[in-house]
Length: 270
Length: 261
Image (cartoon, rainbow over all chains, first blue to last red):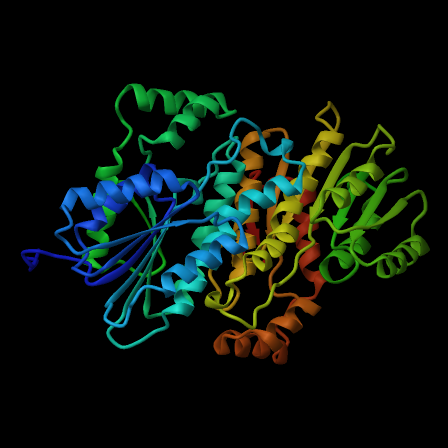
């Protein structure tokens, strides 16, 4: 194997980094992990539905560096299920001064598990399914589209789009019809984007089973008994991953930047 | 009609039945149904459904044909289809639901043009949500019982597996549907679930594909297929689908493509 030349300190450049679903779980961890890889005068934009948790996160990040790293942390309270939420986020991104930015990094992390206590045959109400897809599929596409339009291809500008995916994008889980369907749709959506925009670096990253609120919901509420038990035993046997551990692998991928655009990469395969 | 060549006494529901693959499917299936069967045709346009009903009733006797002009993207539309099956004769042996209704979406634009959440939502509503909700509603209205085989067909596409530039809505919708029906197959072992990719058909949708696709290479490739007579007729593709259904050997939840069969 050839020796790799790794620069002493690696970073993601002077970036506009947008993280959706940043208020808790994986998004929150990524915000911390990414904050130390952004060059001075970068903008870290944190998007979520609840302002309180976002503002707390912003304070925590600023405190961490004691204001020394010249990072502009901005909070956007927006509901990405709705048109105005997406527009508000795109508008906030446009308002950052990007003339000297060399990297636009969008992390589509916001997602919901959906009601996993029920099986597919109970989903008879299109309004319920539509609402789920709006946040988990349409919102991600429209935000990505808006950001790419706001920051078109230009010389010296690196553009990266991350889709936080799941094994569920590839494999059907009983009682998880909304989640699996949404993740499969997202993976395909970002594969199409990668096929269309050769200069955009697109990555669907499946972070593995994380010890988050979503996982708690999974082991408590999954309608499928076997699945619920398997999540419970992963929890009790300490097999869940920490967000930090999984986030570190994603960040290495972004720093190395040699993944195939559009690929689905799983924590366990890296 | 022998048991091998037909579906016996069946309830058949076809969405998007007014034209293209759905219409041809109705015409191909009808002669394979035993007396006492019912065929429910759903689509948004009533005129074309009535036309199809007239065409169907010319040949068949003992077949009940019902038309439901409804928008399956909303609860009321789904409910209207379910209402039609409530009084279906209880001694049917076969339920066949063909989730065929679909739209291509605007293929003249690329991903970065889809900034409007509402536009994407209305696409997914017709192409993803409605298929799930109709399937769920039909399965609840006709629960499992001895002597009844329940078959759910998702009319899929190569686009469920492979990204096509400028086809983001179609590819995402088809990928979503395939997964949805794979989950259903996992959950309900008594069901027979099939994702069938019919191949490139000589329909209005294909015309739209070769005239509007923003991606040049894709548009040219569809035009060539058309010019060189490589598009399949709906009947060609339906014959394979019917053969697969009658043989009944596929793995439930599988994605099968015309060209792999």
